[in-house]
Image (tube, rainbow over all chains, first blue to last red; front, top):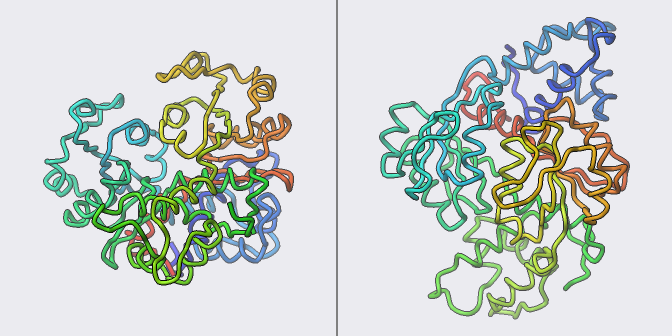
Length: 212
Length: 212
């Protein structure tokens, strides 16, 4: 595990490298070079080389990285071998889908509990995870040592839920509401703005709206 | 409707402005200024002013924008008054959630059909939308004039599905698989990389992994 600092952009590229390495055919052999990954992903070789150097010391000149070891190094750097507990607020369709999304465990994320205010949404999800009333948030949040809070409520309630999470000691928030969230400096907000994504997709298709 | 060009970043901010404007209290009065929005969202006033000028001509010096008109101008710029048809491939949990996500209609997006290869996922979603076998993709895709393709399949199948969409005339792809997609220059890919988001969230929490 390297102690080198890494940029947000590099960190976000690591799962793509991982997917690329895992999808290599057996015929590709035991070793993979930064050049091979760069050409497969249409990225700059220097950038890939730099990203990989930050997470793995296994690179050999002219040979590259032992593919299996590089996969392990990236997974360990991304913390896939550890598990971080998360809580989710807003157990509507999107919230339930995330709660039941099995792949998060591969990424070292475990949504241990969900919360809602509507009686219709309380109870347990298909995978047995429990959806509690929001009144119990702080207590359960602390008991299960949740570090990540996932917000899947309507925009109008997003800031209130965010503030509740911050008061309860959450330091990283994954926001699926298309709202701006006010948080203290030591809290990280990762916005997953569906409305913005749709705007970019339609923007590309709409002739009278040119994207620079 | 302005003909001014707009950057991806500005376009992605418009839904945030919209949410901000819609959540203003009645006491805020009839007009809103770029300065008010900038301070509410902790953005630069010049940036907000520039973004709004690209989508609305209604700004008055020292008064600002008539809130209701600005909301209409942004919604019309984002195409919320038109509807773009989309098709979705991969009707697992995430795919079904998106298929049934009612808010997309507010954004001018209508997922008209979904596709899968697993018999278990075929049939109709809770909102009555039909999930067809992937074999029928091209035909149905053309019949319903789909312009956006949404990919919610496992990484290993993402490129194949992407190529099928491109062959079927799709010009904008919303990719929820953490895979790099190879597309022709005239096709836009909007990546929604959950693994990368989780990496950034855990990265913020993991002490031995410092983000620059």
